[in-house]
Image (cartoon, rainbow, N blue to C red; front, side, top):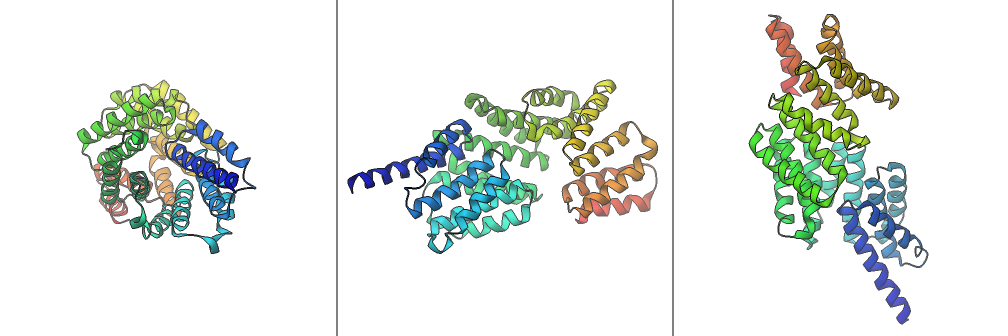
Length: 351
């Protein structure tokens, strides 16, 4: 009996450590604990098994392994008749994160709203802060910047007093930097991104260092300072993070063209366009094609941009519809084609 109690306590401690490493994006440590837990999977209680499966879903998401993440969450749901409130909260959060990785942001938001019903029961600042961070990320991708800013600030307030939450604080600060870029509060955005980058470098998190450098590139591009953006984007590319490579290449090609570095722009565009084809990423193929027409093939600029905007409308990509419609409308305005300008300004504003 005493040995069983000791084993249960050990499993509980391991699950707690695993949860921390997953939240902190400590991938090697999380993988080691995962292997340790799998050795005892046959011996753990049902409650701990449910917790294990819900954490396993998030562990696989951290590795961008969506198939195994989906399997883990389905296995956890098989025990739903035995869920406690804490299990339901964890399920809804895990499901929301999974939807987020699948770019199903409205469904992700719905899952986080379900989880929010259990939020009052949480006592740990890290859990409260993480919830607000996840919801802020979802609002950001839904292009609802005001609510993203609000939840990111609540996450920052939860994380800031705790030194052990430095990674999560930096993550929230990076997101807040992006929110302030969208709001055109560029000085505030720069401050948040600097703090985030300093922390990620201290933690040696190469994944988020690359992401923050990319976001600096976004900031300076939107400030009409492409020459300042380029070093950050080149550094982000050297970070060798596959998940953001196409975004970096797109923005870097744009900045090269804007600064008259035509040969570099063409090489970067070709690399990105080829990679989007290899990945069968139709949205990115359209983005690169539209970028090329903007700078290199002006005869086909209008038709390709119109087709591209229509494609983004069909896939409900409101961000790209707004972004490209606004620029095309400005082009038509400059060329005194006022009816077309009104059409695309309307698309940019009404979606």
